[in-house]
Amino acid sequence: MSKILINKLTNANVYMNGNNLLGRAEEVQLPQIKHKMAEHKALGMIGSAEFFAGIDKLECKIKWNALYPDVLTTCANPFIAVPIQVRASLQTYTSAGKVSEVPAVAYISGTFKEFPLGTIKPGDNAEYETTMAVTYAKLAVAGVDIFEIDVLENIYKVGGTDILLPFKANIGG
Image (cartoon, rainbow, N blue to C red):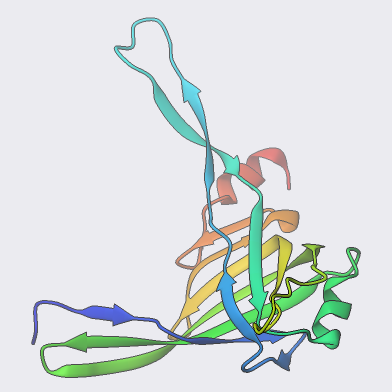
């Protein structure tokens, strides 16, 4: 067996409210999980350290390749949470070629905070980029959960393990 495994994820499809939007999205920028860190420094320490103190706000951007009234109607309501799936195919290569191909699925939910009227240029297709304030995010590869975060339910799981379990027990929730 080859010592080097190369993973490639080069294309995807977007589903909004369960509706297949194949060919409509040009680019998806999924949420970046950024841990807030609290600095600790004290007398007697030769330096300072940082420790986990929560998660920064999550955001998703989707660039649409044309004007889709059904999509923009959904994005225009800031009071309704919208479930989105981004489904891709993760390919693994070795010196023998492609050795596997498994699903990689990002599940997100949140409310749209920006929706455009579009950028129109002569001779070019109009561009529309929406921005979502995300409250739920999950990534699964080959049916195995990598992580799951639900800000409003105080859920943070890594590899299926609830890493906030002691914290939730300590605060009674």
